[in-house]
Length: 122
Image (spheres, rainbow, N blue to C red):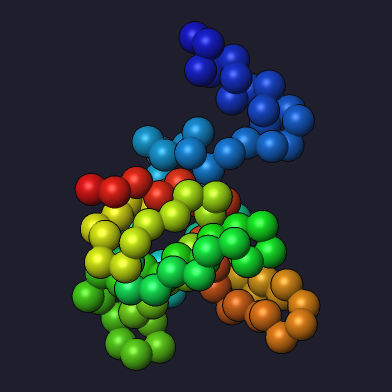
């Protein structure tokens, strides 16, 4: 009951964290996120994969690149922003919101990001 009340209050304030919807987010492959990106925009998703690159502390967040073996060269690398981080080689579960055409300025433009994600080591 407390969790439901917290979600209702957070929704009314417009600040529902993606982790709050973790159990509602369907697990997808990295390639599926790219393929379904228009439908997934603004929605919470969950992806399992391996960390292949990490850039910590950029613009107040960590940028973590995750791959799961799906997709081709253009659709096999999911970039995740989070307060959490992981090390290259870690197997992780990522839950966050899909954002399209994210422009941070100064040349940092991302056609697809998973933002405000929680990153949990498997």
